[in-house]
Amino acid sequence: MAGERTNGCRARCVSPPPCGRLTRDIGLPLAELPLEPMLGRVLLASEGCGEEAVTVAALLSVPHLWTASRGAHKAQVLCARVG
Figure 1 (cartoon, helix red, strand yellow):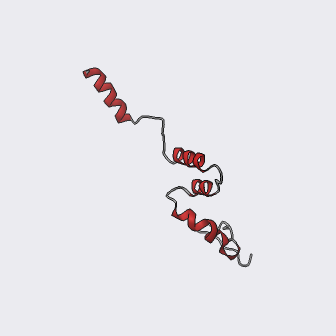
Figure 2: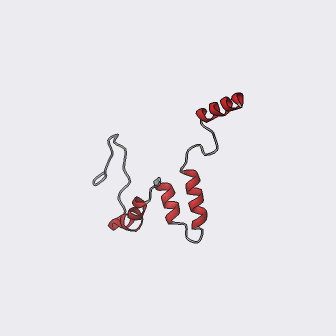
Figure 3: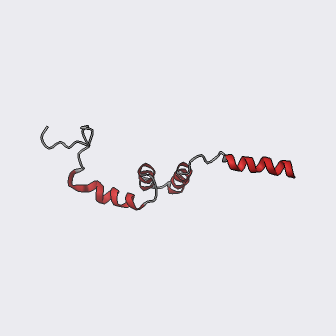
């Protein structure tokens, strides 16, 4: 397997794209976004529906959006007892 690269576990690595096209066209703008690469790639590819893609990326980038923290629940219970 001449020319094949491996990682530390001896698994085959994906070969780099020809001529570095991915790095210039997609990789550099993707690196500038403060998001996980998968969400950033969705935003870069969202022509015509950018507003919706930004909304989805924002919702997916925040963990546990719809659950209250345990401390907030304790504070609500304490306020209900006092008030």
